[in-house]
Amino acid sequence: VTNETVLAELVAIVGEPHVLVGEAAQPYLTDWRNRFTGKALAVVRPESTQQVADVVRACVEANIPVVAQGGNTGLCGGATPDASGRSIVLLTTRLNRIREIDTANDTMTVEAGCILQMVQESAREAGRLFPLSLGAEGSCTIGGNIATNAGGTAVLRYGNMRDLTLGLEVVDAAGQVWHGLRGLRKDNTGYDLRDLYAGSEGTLGIITAATIKLFPQPVARCTAMLALPSVEAAVALLARARAGFGAALTGYELMAGRCMQLVTHHYPHLRLPFEAASAEAPWFGLLEISDSESEQHARDRFEAVLGEAIECGEADDAVVAENITQSRALWHLRESITLAEAESGKSIKHDISLPISRIAEFVALADARLQERFPGVVNITFGHLGDGNLHYNVGSSEGFSGSDLVAKQDDIYALVHDTVSAMGGSISAEHGIGQLKLDELGRYKSAQEIKVMTLVKKALDPRCLLNPGKVLQAY
Ligand code: FAD
Ligand code: 2HG
Ligand code: ZN
Image (tube, rainbow, N blue to C red; front, side, top):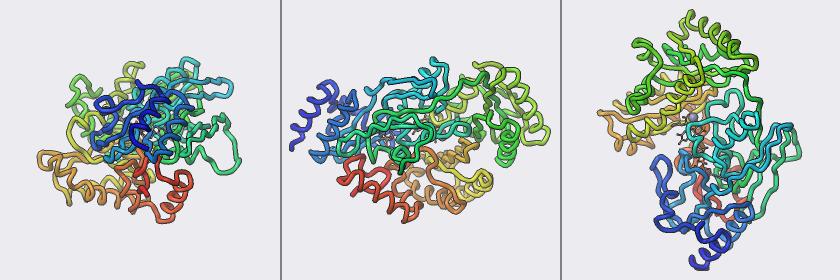
């Protein structure tokens, strides 16, 4: 089968305007971080599950790999095809319908290409909350969120994307559709395919729709930023906040002072809410609680717990947002770190998780080891402390250039990931593996786990045509 024949077949399925080649395909061939650029026969934009199934079948028959892509905001190069030019990129953004909102069941059925923010807004209009929340929410898709099992800033209270997913509709490697859009909270009928596809990064099937969980809208939310003396203090304050707020605690983020300096340097219109001394704090915390009674009740609870924390020396200062605008401004500081880090040049990202009890020890040890081996690198450490998940990122400085950093990526990975692994942690908490961490997975996942994962992959995708070379080695 020639490329021309396949392209003609794809045009027949989705229509000519939706088969992009040449210049039109370029924006979809480089990842968000500009780390990977691939080639593709075409970028194909189906608009229905049937079209996805037909596209996959046509490609499989012609031995053409299929790389699913949603918003292309993934941080591990999972949605970028390889350099062979054999693959097609299957773009899901035209699968963008809200199929159903069932308020009695507190579920919503949405197509995979729906933008996360639009899903949040539709839930809000129906008087419900869809809690997944992350910096890329204006452009990432629900399909990409499920395929990477995204986390974000509300995992502490609501779980990650896998926990928020009840049912799926998936096109498999043979172009067959699994109609699994069940809105059930209990279903023990054998192996859980939903859990298998969540986090599979396009390597086991193409997700075309999902039934996701909704929650009541909180009556009030309260956000505070804290100036913290150390990571130990941040961890102690987390325990206090958990005890004091219980299930009302919805977010607990930690940010090194350097992260805030990067943000205010690159975006001078953004300001920290503290006066001089506190603005120089080595660490900052961002806490959010949701309350089912009232704004005043939330603030009273907040002030009681934060007051105790300051008395005990766990926090040096605290600013409680007085209204939604101030709360958004605090979150904006936090959500701007990734962009400010990108503005500041090359960096090495470590998306690690650990038992919370070992986080402070990890930061001290990894910081010391890094400075000893690579003097001059800078730490850009932040993350979801409440989940034991840190973005332990490493940046360049005048004494250690961005190109040196990239050249040393494998050694820096080894140092940080060996430290994480020795403490019982994970080398990918929420961003996945993609192509960026393929070798790292082989290094840190047990041989037994890799064996079983490979058996699953071979059973579901025997010709290795679904996103080959991502998560597991291609065969
Ligand atoms: P893409 O980037 O298009 O794809 C990601 C992977 O999923 C690829 O392997 C792709 O093949 C696969 N895929 C996409 N759609 C489908 C589908 N329908 N079926 C099968 N496979 C599919 N992540 C977090 O977990 N927490 C955060 O807080 C967070 N913050 C971020 C902030 C910024 C500024 C950015 C740029 C990214 C952030 N991310 C975060 C990364 C996160 O993985 C993505 O934002 C999001 O989950 C990916 O969605 P997407 O639609 O862009 O997927
Ligand atoms: C976040 O928590 C994202 O903001 C991105 O997961 C993390 O940029 C990063 O390393
Ligand atoms: Zn994150």
